Each structure stands twice: as C-alpha cells, then as structure tokens.
Image (cartoon, rainbow, N blue to C red; front, side, top):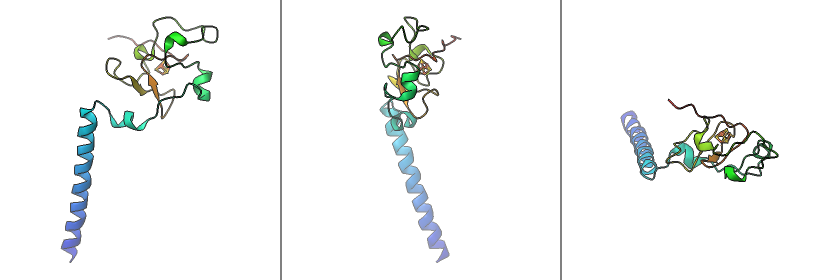
Length: 116
Ligand code: SF4
C-alpha cells in the first residue's frame, strides 16, 4: 500500500517535470525566455515611466522634459537592459520591476553600456 502511494507521487513528479522541460524547450525554440513571456510591456502612461520620461521610441523623448537625453541613446545600449539588444525587442529593466521595456526606448535613468 505504502509502496503504491510513493509510485503515484513519483509518477506525478515525473509528469510535472516533463511538462516543465517541454515548456522550456518550446519557449526557447520560439526565442522567448520564461521571464519575458510573463512580464507585460511597460505602459508609457505608468506614473514611474512618466516621471522618468520613458518612451518606447527614444526619438520621441521630450527633450525639454528630459534634457539629459542624447540622440543614439536607447535601452538597447543601456547597461540596465536585461535582454540581448540584437535579438530581444522587449526585455526587463530593474528600474521598472515586473515590466519589459522596448529595445528602442529610453528613460532618464539611462546608463551607457560599457563595452568589454
Ligand atoms: S534604465 Fe536603461 S534600459 Fe531601463 S528604461 Fe531606462 S534607458 Fe531603458
């Protein structure tokens, strides 16, 4: 009796593990990480986004409101962008927890990426 209960639990564990592996494989084939799949895109009207002058398209940054902006600066070349700029259109940024920012975006917390 005890042995069959353990077998049932083991089967359930193996099934759950198989599903998790299959989900990861499908996500990676589609080029989407689980972290990216879960996080919604940052809304430009989000109070924190407005406060930091965030725009999905850096060329639309209000230069009067964000005088530190320089043409060519984008999330894709910011140190805080947590994606691969050549592959990810959207990726997380620690300035906006739980959200993704656009690779062509910009905010006033921009920090130039130091190339190695
Ligand atoms: S901190 Fe950098 S990556 Fe994050 S939104 Fe601002 S410019 Fe983009």
